[in-house]
Length: 453
Image (tube, rainbow, N blue to C red; front, side):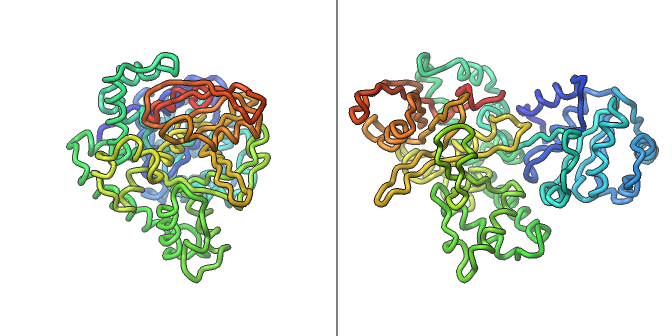
């Protein structure tokens, strides 16, 4: 499978050239491209040494409690026949989750072999890390990786010039109409294909939605087969029920008693936690949002969940391609939750990959109140509300109410409209003037405080 440029490539090269370098641990769900990104980085080294502790279990013996990392590297070099030389070799330890002593050894590479470039990754790595108290704090750097973003999807298709043009656009300088229409059609395609690397590759190869859908089913089968590895206290059948319920309840506050008949909420909560650790879902937690940090006032009794990929989600829900391709722009954004999920996933993918992404929303809990803001982000020391909604100014009462209640003067609406902006006078707040910027869904990476790339 061909390698396509990823955002993380730039971060990996910066790490390679850093003088104060730490061993890297790349974290993320299975099949999002972690190993491929490391191999691509390996091409920039004189030597590239890769070991896989699941496929080569005998190598686990080199990782002991009283490890001498230089001697360990000599042993590995002898076995695989590749020189391991400081500043010339990239050592990649794949499937490191299968050997806890190997994970613990990473700290000693920083202390005893700082000139050697070391990267590790693994499937279901978070479960192993959860069992390691105070894991090498300050001695290891984590990078979080996700499926392709929309910008990566465009670049993979050879549309880098269009991506650059999009990045130059803004609410005050919108795209020309032909490019705007092209981007909206590409976004519809991306919703169906999704960002799993193999699906992207298949789409570029044959432009067949049916082939991508079958691949999505195969990927989900792989994830379901992993369920037996998660934790013994949560049965695989319950995990299957809960992940299906997440897909059905997408865009709404998750209701525990709808997840699995006759199963108590604590068991469902355990299943959600494990699916989150595996990277298959991401919680979007309610916060009072009275200031920064948003997590200071979170209330995890109220949470929505993002499914990791829109292509996988639509396949699980058996939504035909025609429902996405033929829907009007307004229908696609306002009916169903796929646009909201896409927006949330895009925000995650453009965040700083050195930090675990946390997502928040707000909902008014007063009786008979239905005000809700889809996403909240920090813009410096200010809360930035982001509403996924197509329509006119009059259809934005939730955003207006929230900005009034929190004394904010700037918000964002995102949909399939072009770039734009408007001011409105809040007659319920002493005629205060507030500003709304409109960003197309395809251009969330243009919002400065969201994008680290």
